[in-house]
Image (cartoon, rainbow, N blue to C red; front, side):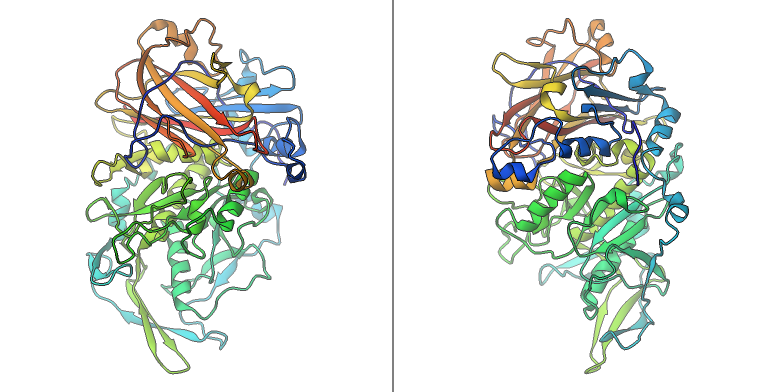
Length: 620
């Protein structure tokens, strides 16, 4: 399907500087150096010749086309501000030789203007039947279906206690432990179910891709509809455990959405251009082959390359090997090592703690993961019954309870929450770098895990709940293309920097959080041995009215004192991460942010190209 012009609203950079020490996302002390990378799509033929990809290459143009840009655009900046009453969206394009003149309507859109521009780029889902009349969902087999091709068949057994109270069952992750499972409705309440309060459901939804080994089956007797990405792919059809795992993830993907997504299933990492699907695939959930790895794996590399090329948001379970019998931290799921993916750990709703089975150990120079945590341990199933598989060959039975657990459940649940964001707000579509920053800052319920300062993303935060007296406010931005086009300045040490000014969305008692995240190609990570680019994030504060003029999107920072922009508030300078996060416990009216490119490895195929996102969030 063909994309038109200007989609994603963009924002510009404005000013300030940094230094100091901070704690990483898991509460560990960060080093003086900083994080990983940023990039542009790569021309692999040039890689063999050790050539860098230059501005204007076909792959770079393709990446910018994905965000609706014409051929002569070299870089773009985007901005979305939920706290502005109008013209909340803006975009600035850097052409070869000159940027947009952002004193005119070319750079700003009101809500309706942006919505119309975005929907000219993204084909709405409700048009898929007319655009592609051959689109036919595949119906998953139900519990009663038995045509002789499967070695297991369904039986149904009543199960007391489901739906109204918690159930304690043996843990599948460690012998001798029990897990308490709660009705799913209760866990949704923990996440602040706020969809009825969202006033701008103007967009149709899209597709979710789910990588699976087995096709989903129905636990409640109803028909489940999904779409195979490749009709020739074969799936496991005789393993009830795999069928259960697939069903549970499928169920979670359709529970919290106001509009049920179309779920595509397949076995491959690379399912082709997500924009070529109708409806378009905005997001992926990777629950296939949950195997841990001690090195940067081939599947992680392939997934990083896929995200870097196609810019979809991909969720991966962290893995369930956090407890290996010796209480040692377990290795991450192989795909969970992908730097560009959003890796999700599990939280026990009973106590708000990270589960002891959540994997956290990455390869030695890999980013700290999981970046995000969410709830698991839920009772699901419409009719509240457990399922019994009966094996035909020897008449033995296996029982599977209507519960979800593990990091697979946490990842699928988080993906469904985020799907609403992508459905309702096209600004975030095909910007995984912004979505990760968004999740790092959009937290509600704190995790009780020692000194770890981490919050669980909730629906109210993710959907900008404007109801009540304390609305949640956001400032989201991205920079995509040549750093030389997008930088605010090069400092005296030769470091390239992006500066911008915004209003403080928080206070000292209700602090705002801000984060940056960036993308890398898997080829670069494999060849260099770590993330090739490293950025630092610093924030300063001021009450001077002189800063008001700088808060406009794409404002020129003439007159800003970069060496002394205000009082230093916080900074994040990790060495190997692909993200940075700061807490802004301050009453200053204006915040001055600095994103500094600390390093850009000369061996990178994408040297000089950046794909970086920013988000700040707080409840006023």
